[in-house]
Image (cartoon, rainbow, N blue to C red):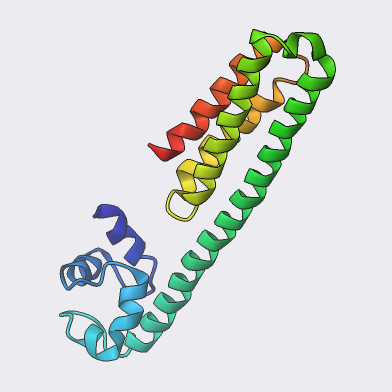
Length: 174
């Protein structure tokens, strides 16, 4: 609640008292302030009627900025997810090429399963990008870091690294 009040104070002409009154009236976001219009804002006690048009304009601009930035973040996360998929595929190719004999054994099958699990988790995260932007960004960054560390690892270490990367992705979903 306090965060929303501070957000409303970004509007020129709105202080601590007015932001509290606006929140009590149900105008706790920039979009709601812009949608309320002049009539809605003039009902709030203590608001300067001459500033109402400017407040509505500012609220509309700030609401647009918030929507735009979220859409931009989601697009960036989608690009990051594509890069992560490429990294996982690169790890799979490296396992196949570098550890051909070991990959045919039990350890290879475990790594193969883990690769499939990581890809599955990544696809689930891609489905949640719109609703969990911040958490998805953190989880995918951590997974990317884990996958980057697998460049010079052995087969067992690759399996463990993939498992840690998958756990980072699963935290986005919880």
